[in-house]
Image (cartoon, rainbow, N blue to C red; front, top):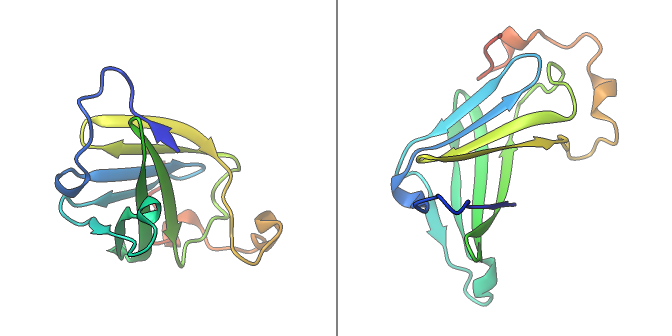
Length: 136
């Protein structure tokens, strides 16, 4: 979750570029073009309505969700498929930028179906062979 600071001029998700960067051994940078997020209005539970993006960025299937919580607070979720996380150190630093507003936080990656993702990294490909990843 994130809350906009006092000096923020607000965010306008449908018309602002949204960028995400994960920093570990090599950074993963994802930039969603302005106009790419669509509003999903939940038909029965308005509190579950949210902005969504689903698409391919840097050859990776990406899903991002931003849900307004009120009082300039938002819930943020990010999923990427086919992403080799072995080059990342846990926890990693995530930077989210929406227009001219940005913030950083430490996160621990979750991989569906795996208890300890570090065990799958033996013999993994280098960061350079992972789509969307550029070496430092």
